[in-house]
Image (tube, rainbow, N blue to C red; front, top):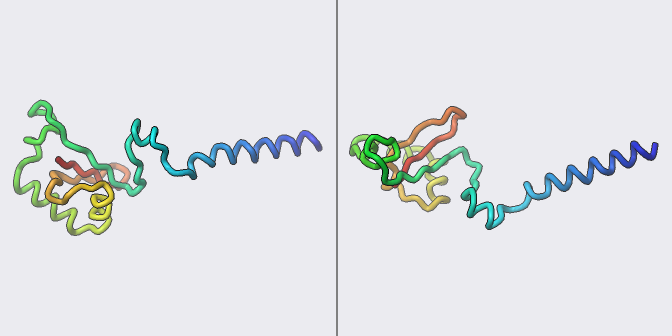
Length: 110
């Protein structure tokens, strides 16, 4: 009886210790190491200078028609607009929008 009670108490304490950090806000160290977590189904990728054949190179996305289409997609979706506002990304900096395998959106911006 005492062993069952002790095992239950340990289980409850272990569960509380694991759930505690996940319920807390994101620490400064984790923001520095991994970036801010928004949990909104949107991933924003900053396009960096690289090789021109690389998909992350701006010249790959700097086709005016492609940029206008991406910006219209963002303007037509309030959740994407909200996600960009939280990340402080202006709509005119959006280069391309893709749908991820999990149904979320991937936004490429400069």
